[in-house]
Structures are given as structure tokens and as C-alpha cells.
Image (cartoon, rainbow over all chains, first blue to last red; front, side):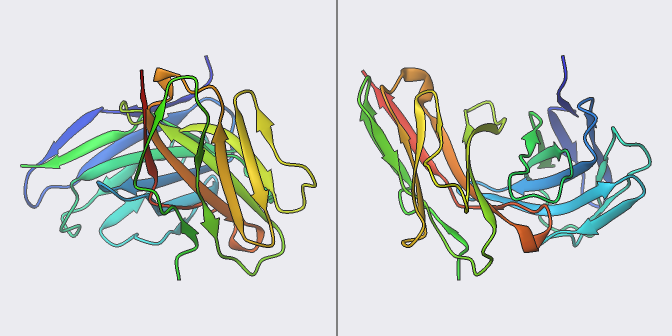
Length: 115
Length: 115
């Protein structure tokens, strides 16, 4: 089945530690995105990538880093510089067409907790 | 100013009744798209329905329809014949053509369907 997978489902981070969240898609989509969701809030864009080897900062990129070495993979690293990383992280992908109709499809999410 | 506003933090509806979830938006871009997503307690965001700014007719997808009032900048989601499985968080989102592929989300409405 085509879709987006995220791992792990739950992730625990110690103070001062970097952690990496995995996102893989087999939809042959060009564009991929990372969002953060806090309780009672909508999704906020962290980083996005329109094409392999290229990515742009979203609205809340500080304390995060990404790479896009392969079309199907877009890992997110939460660095120690991110002071409040506890949140639900969602990865999405889309075809990457420059159209208002462009629909993003989401993975199941990773819940990050700080110990 | 908020680009997407959802004023109903929570809604209750009886099974088999119809319910309307409100969404207003703010943009100066003449070309934009409006999306509704459903987020069950599992966390995954499920795409429900899309409305383009130039679409002449209101979008429909099964039991979901979008009441699009362009002059009032509103895009309300109507769920007909509510089912227990409709209980979830619902998010309205907008993509502005001038804003790349980014989606801007509202804060969501928690819908509870009761017997």
C-alpha cells in the first residue's frame, strides 16, 4: 500500500540530546513537510522540501534541522537548541505541483517527550 | 491577523443529525485553496474535502460538503447524518498560491457525536 510512515511512534529525549524522527513515503511525491502540533493548537510548519537536496524553513524552524538526500525520505532532527520539544510531530507529502489544489497527505505522527 | 479562524473549540451533535463546523479565512491572494482535515484520537490527519477559490460550485465528498461563501470569506464544513466515528478534531486549512505549497491551519474544532 502507498503511504507515509513515521517512526518511532513515541520518542523520549533527554536534556541536551539530539533526536531524529524518521519520515518515509512511497507515493512518489516530490514535496515533503514537517509540522509540529501542540495541545489545543493547529499545525505549524517547521521545514519543507519541494525537491531532493533542497529545503526551506517554515514558521518555526529554530532548533530543528532536516535533510533530503532521497526523494522518499525526509528526516527531522530535534536539536538541543530546541528548548521546548515536547509535541506531536507530523510529516506530510504532496505531488509538488504549483497549484492551490495541491493536497498534502499525512503520516501517523511521532509523539516526542522530554525526560 | 489570523489567516484561518475556527471559533468553535467544541461541538456536540446527535447521531444521524447534520452539523456545521465554521471556518473563516483571511487572504489577499486571488487564487487559494481551502481544505478540511479530520484528526481522530490516533493522531493521523485525514484529508476530507477541498474547495478552490475559483470553483463555482460548493465541493461535496460523500457526507461532507463545504459551504463556501467567498464574499464573507467563510468555508464551513457540513457533515450530514453524523456517525459515532465522526467524533474527532477537525481542522480547516488554506493554501495560498503566492505562498508556495505551505498550508496554514486553524486551531481546530473538537466534534463529539452522541447517541
